[in-house]
Image (cartoon, rainbow, N blue to C red; front, side, top):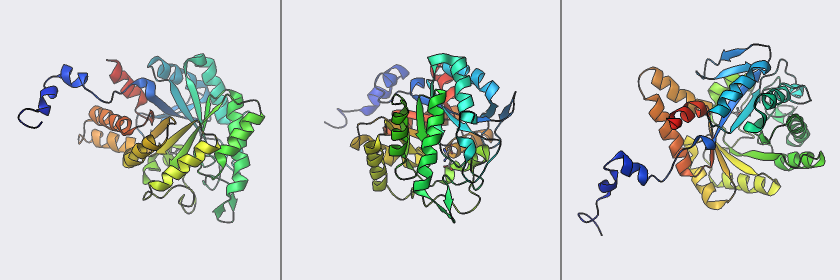
Length: 325
Ligand code: PBG
């Protein structure tokens, strides 16, 4: 059956019809809102490279999380900005590290109304800015695993629902799972940043988290943007090691990877619309070159359409507000 019997425009005639046959629907329930927690008190400082996003001190992060929960967004992902850095990223772990403090403050503020996820990585905490400990000029994979496990334990003990390792060391999901299970924390889940690409789109985040590598780059541990099949191997390994959910990051430049992963694996899939994806839209909108709201909704819809179950996005609050109207 073809034209003139078939006319696809027939179902596009009105808003009601279009919405009736919509294949992908966005919901705030699928968003995770990333948050930056740093030292001091009374701090809510806007991040210059990510307008509309803030760095909070522990005493102010609770009120922000109440707002997030009230908007119907079910989860936050925490990044810590420590007071001091050293070779081994010591400020990433221990009961009083910045993220553990934030987890306790948020739990006190919102109870069980929010899922608290914690990014697990060393780059914000190491003096050299790499995601693990160094042996010479190289990141020592196996020596890093213990530290990532220690970091995960600190966040889980503080009350995190989920830890999200973003370091891209081999074997970290297994190391973290074992550590959690060994500490009677088998209820804490792991969202693995499985296919994390060595992307230029993390630029604004590195300014926000002061986590740019002091020498070299991350290409010896993060993935080559050219590779799709390798992403499937990363995901398969993380599932085998015990990941409860997997992530693809960035999102928009890697929709093909999300789509393939959706076809191959039954596991819940997250996609991270990263800082550069966010800031490009915001900057273009500030210049009047693009409509901020429409770009936000179109990109989020595209990421869901490709197959992501949940989206980590700096637009979470804005999009939730819009979806509520
Ligand atoms: C830490 C980490 C990064 C991001 C999330 N976790 C930075 C990096 O790998 O350089 C990027 C998030 C974003 O750009 O929004 N390893």
